[in-house]
Structures are given as C-alpha cells and as structure tokens.
Amino acid sequence: MEISAGTVDDVGALESLWLAMVEHHRDVVGGQWPVRGRAESWAMCRKDYLKWLDEGSGFLFVARPADGGEPVGYAFCQVQPAGPTFDLGESYGEVHSLVVSEEARGSGVGSALLEACKQELRSRGTTYWTIGVVEANHDAVRLYERLGFGSWTRHLLARVDD
Ligand SMILES: CC(C)(COP(=O)(O)OP(=O)(O)OC[C@H]1O[C@@H](n2cnc3c(N)ncnc32)[C@H](O)[C@@H]1OP(=O)(O)O)[C@@H](O)C(=O)NCCC(=O)NCCS
Image (tube, rainbow, N blue to C red; front, side, top):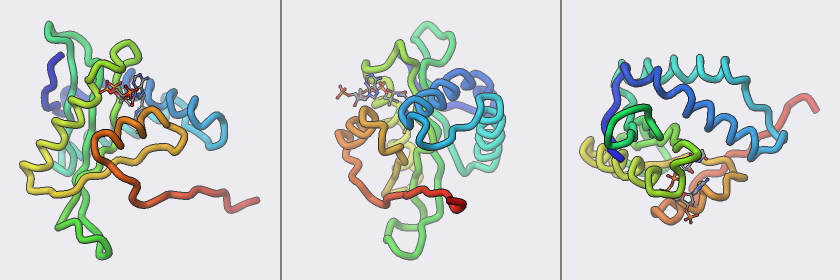
C-alpha cells in the first residue's frame, strides 16, 4: 500500500469511497438523522474539496495499492483558525473525511492515512488536531481513541419544528 499526497487531479477518483462513507453513515444512524442522497452529497463534497485544495486550507492523502490502480482509501484534512476559548495555537487540524474501502478495512490503511495527516500538520506548525465522529460509529471511535484522541466538544442535534 502506498500513501501519497493528493491534488485536485485526484478528487474525481474519490467519488466511490466518499459514497461508501455516506452509506456507512446512513447505516450507523439507522434513520435517526437524515442523510443526503448520493448525487447531491458527492456534488457538494467535490466542490468543497476542490475549493479547499485550491485555496490551500485543506490537504489530501490517498492510499493506493503498491502497483497503482484505484484508491482504496483517503483522508482529507482541513486547517482551521483556532477560537478564543481553547488555547490550540493559531490554527488546528480537522480531519474532515476518512474512509477505507470495505475490502481493505482492518489492515492498517486508516491508521497510516491518519499518521500522514499528523505529520503534515506537524510540518505546518500545528499542535492539535480533531476528528468528528458520529456517536453511533463505535468501530471508528475505538480506532481514534487508540490513536490518542479524547472526547472534546459534544455536538447535539435537534429539529426546531417539533
Ligand atoms: C474507520 C476506517 C477509516 C478505519 O480504517 P481501517 O483501515 O479499517 O483502520 P485500521 O486497519 O488502521 O484500524 C483498524 C481499526 O479501525 C476500526 N474500524 C472501524 N471500522 C472497521 C471495519 N469495518 N473493519 C475493521 N476495522 C474497523 C477499528 O477500531 C479497528 O480496530 P480494532 O482492531 O480494534 O477493531 C474504516 O474502517 C472505514 O472506512 N469505515 C467506514 C467509514 C467511516 O466510518 N469513516 C470514519 C468517519 S469519522
């Protein structure tokens, strides 16, 4: 497996992995929260990735088999300005997306992608990084906790019309 930095030219090849993550979220929330349709979701995501890569506010690592071929996983990380409460320095990293194809899960690709993001953030002078995870995504939470992430803020969601 090879992990390399991705550019705007790699974004098109991420569609099926992104959609696998959307479907994973559809499964784990079990209808409790609405999840966008596939075409709409990818169109929005693609637009964001291209914008963030273009303006340099995000970076991408892609995992491919050593002999080339289609990506089997990727991580997209953003660099966000830090707020006034927590002293995280000027900016902190946020892992916006992380996904590995179903067949390749459990063999270290996700951990290797996160490690690449961590090294890139360090080289940019960032001290902290965060990753948002749906509460019901227990497998992913286990991985993040093992890598040293601890609970920080908690996002609660509700409707305003009931
Ligand atoms: C979460 C994910 C990126 C981890 O990548 P990975 O390559 O499977 O991870 P690694 O092999 O480096 O580490 C394995 C750990 O990942 C976690 N994991 C999450 N889902 C898993 C799966 N379906 N199969 C195996 N491991 C999984 C477990 O904590 C596992 O550790 P364990 O041995 O204690 O069970 C990947 O499983 C995935 O794409 N899941 C679906 C999408 C998703 O949930 N993305 C995260 C959104 S916040």
